[in-house]
Length: 263
Image (cartoon, rainbow, N blue to C red):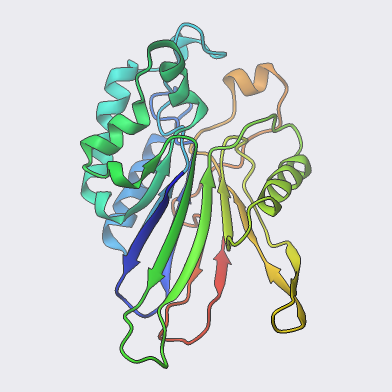
């Protein structure tokens, strides 16, 4: 596993949108909302983290039916590339989801990897889990260091029947990774943001303190129905292009390292 390092020269607070489970191609996909969101990102000074399942990719061996997609998987991939091209430079990193992994399992074709290659962003892609380091601001003097944040991004797995179970699963996984400031997870369509704290014993300075971890479970760009309804799963937390999940990361201009969440 490699650390993806992105340097953002602006010294003020930056805006990051964690995005997952778009399911482009599904008959339940929120096409208008997703297109409006892409236009919003193009207008704004904002960045994206892509958490997988960008296309629905219902294959013959999928849990869902291929007939629940309104366009073929190859067209889904092509359309996603076209939508992301105007905002590709705002993508900080990307991982694959279980819907893309179906094709990798059957044919060894990495759909999400193909999308990132088409965007000329393959250096910022990790198939299973991405470790992202953001360096915000320029170091002008020794007294004002660059503010850095470290995040883990993975699509996630497991059932999503109860929201609390999703939160607990994500937080437990977050505790296993030392040194991260945030964990971004998708898959369950349960939109949540939690901020658990971990006790840190600093034996070098003889100090005991707490460190906050921001854990985001991404919303989905898909309406309720189909497989989820047949399995009696709870309705998804649907994404809102007017009020998306947002992370605000303070740069070195403020002199404070802090992640503020807005939703």
